[in-house]
Image 1 (tube, rainbow, N blue to C red):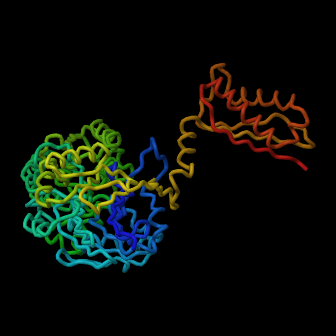
Image 2 (image 1 turned 135 degrees about the vertical axis):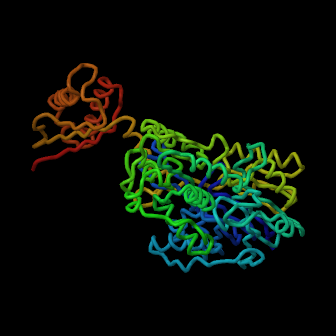
Length: 554
């Protein structure tokens, strides 16, 4: 009989922050029964992924084994954990399990994609469990920056796995459940084979602070601000939204929610019973009739997203509302690495308007939703696993987290995306590597990272483009080819118009070309492309992309 094993395979979220997609398997090698944990997204940037809307894991490996996939478990409703659910589920077709708040938002995503929302089943908190083939899985509450976050308790024939999800050791989170040390001690008491653990804040040396540390400072700031106050945070951080809204209410300000994500999250919190006393809000239309010193705006787009409310306010106006000199804008959030440029652009735009911009650098107005280094060490001690597998972090985070575990004698492994780890023995062992690329949502279609679409866009952006059109009749050119450059300087080094130089060079070529070349579309196209690229390079220093159109009159 072939020996059974227990495997862990990250397809996204390990070696990066975002796009969380993890797989566990039990059974004989290459014939394991599988579960997936989270189907998340990460976000594009204009430098490396121009025109792309969302980035998610390449799930080819999992989709090819969809007949062995027992279930999908979603730990919480942040986009980097649930954002790809409706996009990728049609390739997997497995039952989806989540807690009530997460399930509510997940069903909305499924409905928007034209899929059956009832594929998502609501599960109560631990000790309730779900049977999924050889797995029994429970959702154990953790504190995080979104309600009803959970770590997963995954029981297998080879022992218990704790998949931490995103978590922090916050005993007073405001909205959502506190971290319950006794609950987790009970989960750990019979032994844990492996702890697969959040690594985001492994470099933060001080114990994490509580969400309850913030209200006084935020309330004082809002009360003392002279003009209109606006604040942005992660739309999913309902506890922070409530704190900000209550600060506005206490200062006699009317609260306005700006941005679809803000409204959606607050509505979901109310509909699921998580938010029971959120301050009354007014619409942007109503706000137009309220003195600006009596307004408190809560805006989406804390990471500089171009289409979000914050960025639109920075560009001038959103829903009829305008920031002016003497107003205050608060970033009650941390800038995720990679988003610094977009956020800084917004800060400078507000500064140019005379708006006072306040960020989280003082530590007064934001706390992280992830466990810091001392908190991770405390969680290791509480769970006392046989082995540690860091996840949810860049490669440097994974390495530092393994080193932290080793300080306490805990064997660990650095396992970035595509690294299959055998968790069966006394220490984690790399079993094999699989392809773990990326999938792009490009407009309304999914494309692979290797399809060449994004690469072509980058080349066009860097080098420009020229369309060359030539008309021939009876294997003779009719006039000179004509050119249409895009993304190139109008005049080159010679001082003459670039189009004139190009058309002259191409005209000389076709006038001298022999009949054999003019008769062969392939040879003629290659020659026209080569001359175009050389002329443009001589004139501008760029080697453009070239499209040649050959028309033959019959």
